[in-house]
Length: 128
Image (tube, rainbow, N blue to C red; front, side, top):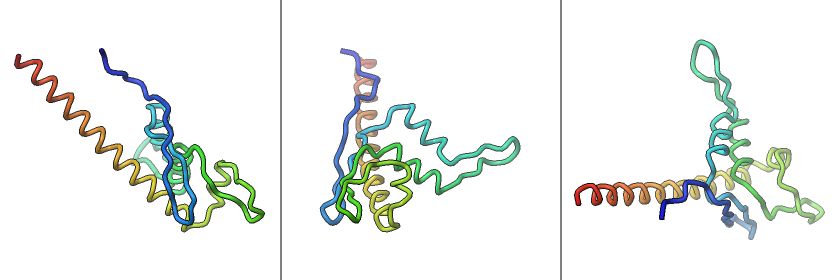
């Protein structure tokens, strides 16, 4: 059976402090990767690209996050929006970024393992 070359939408729940959680995409598809690559980047005709780090980090959260458990001062659920991400306190945003980075690191290791397995399988097929 040929391998599936498309990203199937899956959600992963990551737990934060104080009983809160975020839900993130298990993996990004190419369109989401390209949107993230362009987040906060401005290209110049001559010279290196200029990166707006605020736009990049907010864009990174917006691309990956799908839901969260956060509530406002009146104990009402807060909808996940760009404005809500921008309104987070620094500690919470850092915690989200740390959890997201750990998730991406695990995903990258899984991809390396899959790639190595495919290379090994391909080499075995070629030598037989």
